[in-house]
Length: 378
Image (cartoon, rainbow, N blue to C red; front, side):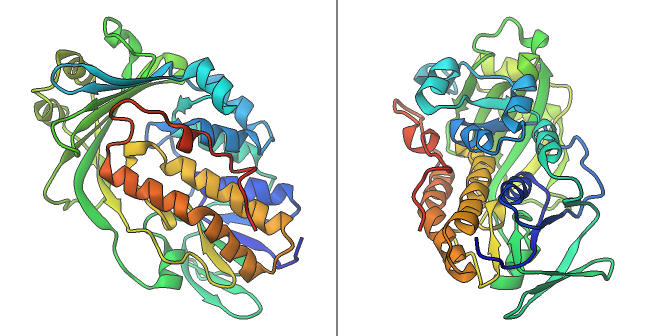
């Protein structure tokens, strides 16, 4: 293992914490700098397909076991037509997926995943209230300057700070992500309210009359709740925040022509969050000699393949393997990480934007069967 000095991970989200756990386990000196003062129970859902769960299982540290205690395991992945309700594809998940891919699909509250990852971090690694302002890279290291005026020195910086990444801006210059013209609604409905509806234990996607309009549902909290995720076209987004409280009646009106079972899902919601969906095109490069990116910082995705979190987790595992097991110099290792990950993440970025994956008969093998712990690296 090459000694390149302390590792600074910017962003204490899913990808950032997975990278810190994996690198700490290999003996690296890691600090995670998260701008939030603490983790609130914000957001609602996380859908971890088998490729992501297998990557988390490989971390050890009790992460997989902790998730299984509260997560739901969807029984199937079903595609249905928005007006007739016709099922156009149905893939068995549950025990069948676990046997086929080595790990199950798990659906849960995002906060439960973050809590499991935080518990697996060594004491003192996570530092909250640390908003990065700028980076200065030299041949000997990287200086990080934070909003409170403090500075840190690192041998390697990993930008896991999301679509509005400060780290990304520092190495590629300022630019804005593109608003897709699509907004998303998120709601959590207690399962007993929907007890008369079929397929509540499945991951179900209602495909609308255009690629931007859909409703996705799946179980949370060991099946006690049902998560509802709906998207629709919108010309512009003028809100200061990317997520705002939504209007349940607006949501219902947008899907008034959908099948009665789909409308019943929305009727069960008391409140909803509304957010804008942004994307970037695949990047030509992710790294400098001592700085690299992972997850949404380098390949933000539309949610239509449910792979945003999964690809960040895969990135973190592959990066830790390259840095710990190849003996490459740091610049060469970062290039090898990009080469190992670029084509897969670009394919999923583009596929998510097109939004036709598994609409009709097919299988998810090329996504679900990927193993970040064994895929070829330099």
